[in-house]
Image (cartoon, rainbow, N blue to C red; front, side):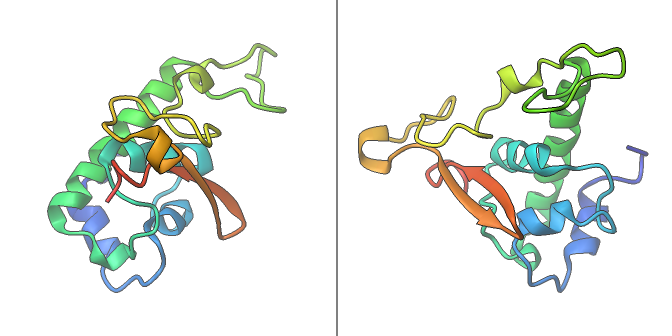
Length: 142
């Protein structure tokens, strides 16, 4: 990512957007390079619900989300990406970021560092947005 990606950039791009923030993050005209896994993980890191309307995010929340995106992508790069079904690095080896996922593909599990009562909440939720799976913690992500 270039130096232009920050909270102010994201805030300007999201102004007037009526789509859920998770859908906006997948829009390559808004932010290039964020895939489905990294969008869910970034929103979890930022504590923002994927159901929130994009335009409802404050400038402060956009700063927090931009920082979370950078952190998530940097961790993923360091770990060599996420190997799920068919992804492999160019040399044929697997990435290891899937072992660091907090919410992605963890339906019903308790998320890390969360105070929710999994017996009451049912743990991490999975929904479908724009034809893609979204994973989130309704307690931590507002």
